[in-house]
Length: 203
Image 1 (tube, rainbow, N blue to C red):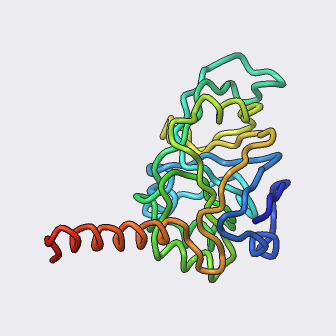
Image 2 (image 1 turned 30 degrees about the vertical axis):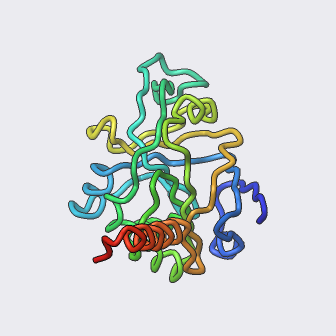
Image 3 (image 1 turned 90 degrees about the horizontal axis):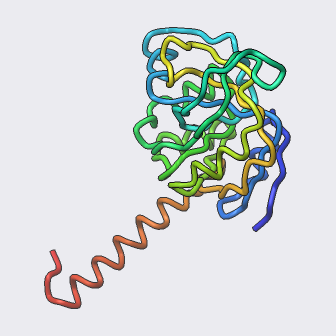
């Protein structure tokens, strides 16, 4: 298992170096995205002026503060609490996000499913897992909010963050079909069957 420090953006070849169980630290740029953002982008045909090509997105709807515009807050927002939400419900958007916008990495909680795994394998992507309940720590990795689009969806706008050493994050799904989440599910199912059999309650 290896640790990778990635200055964003990256290309497919770099993503394919990642293996499940590796850890990753991201630098420079990260985009925040969530359900409403994705619904508007792909179900309602909205386009963004932000360039996501080669970048990572984090499943989030951040708590932010409105502040006077400055060098530290160029769009009048400052980070307050930037946590991560569960990823599975955004499964159907992964391939479109990669094909249309060029996204390479997805950060979230709980993993994603078979459709996402197939998109990662075909297009060169990976899922980076973050520990739930770590919003206070995550927020320290955000230096400033550099830009925002679709802000009528606030807080599920499309956010552009300037980041500083975000991580380490765990590679939970890679571009080679590997998924730690599937491994855990299979292991749990196997243990459950064994326990039920041991007490005579097998199905």
